[in-house]
Image (tube, rainbow, N blue to C red; front, side, top):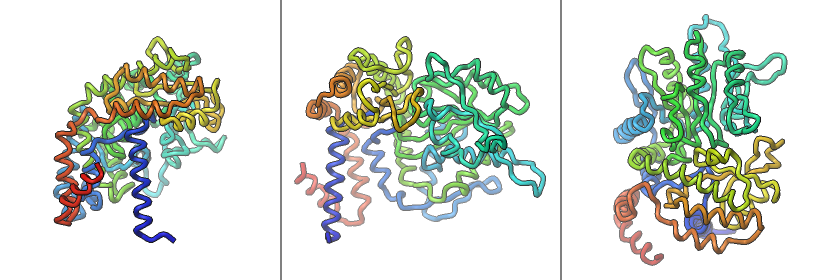
Length: 478
């Protein structure tokens, strides 16, 4: 049986090997992932990662239930200010620790809101009916009855299934919603909540169209946009709060620069129709869903928000340009690309390819991974099951942050075509090509960041000799 020291050494060795493979030898093209900057990582492992800072509004005052939290209180206030600046909104809830939890908190808040004023003794009612994107048409799992919506929407007594109606899609392009049929369904069903946003996401959602449709209804639906995949593209891709959405939710680690967390944002001034909904959402964040809301990643989110607000315009424009260039390059090399070519195939960071002519999506994804090209197999809208996917889903956001431009994705498309279409091995070429893209952009340069990171890292250890020991070990390993 291995000793404690041996197990530690073995795990450390595996961590090192995985870091080298993911960060220096392979191209990560999974659209729901990204590498945070060095300073975001340093914040994440700092002292707050082991602390608590529970708080809630009581009699108009924010009450904290722990001591030693003056710093993290300041961090949370600053993070709300930076995120509010990013969305140009007045309300932000940051205590959800994932995008899925953010959605669940909204659903809990909706149930509480809809039951305000019910007579004493009357049982609480669930949401009567919800409309959303179909899972097989790209809808996100977290807004499905099997996901975060579970147990928050009423059942249809005739079918025994949840009262969820999916948005209709265009026959000639299933990645776009059919607005005419959407209007008909909305007027027929009068939903309590409409959840826009997808995980297979290449086009805008018709927020302004729906907002204009329902704005004069006496009891209009709440319009929610799950921007988990496109949060970091807010403004350049779509600005749903300006278009009539009431709420934006999302995770902060896909196209946004942050660690893995979630958030909820909106505009709910005092006196507005949905102000009490926002109060219910806050109460479902705490104490309704969280106790410790992971203060290390909260601190890291503040650092990421600084970066995003500083560099977002250049980053967002480059991401979208890279995605279009990548899609065109793949198509030119014989790889079938989903979406409308007239629109450049995509308006986001995502590129979808159809690989069924060359094998099963799962097998193709494994073949790509064996060649250091890390992607997502994906069921396309006409697939019968997720177990037999026809597609591969890719995102350009992480490699854009590592400095790739349009012409660089042209070469990457050639590698992918060689693997998918020609079934060739390109692993060594991919590893060599990745060496060109090791410096993270849209943040402080290494020369600026490393001294700051070193100070943070050395402050974490109470050992006064840590600095010398760390520098000596670093020198020996370089």
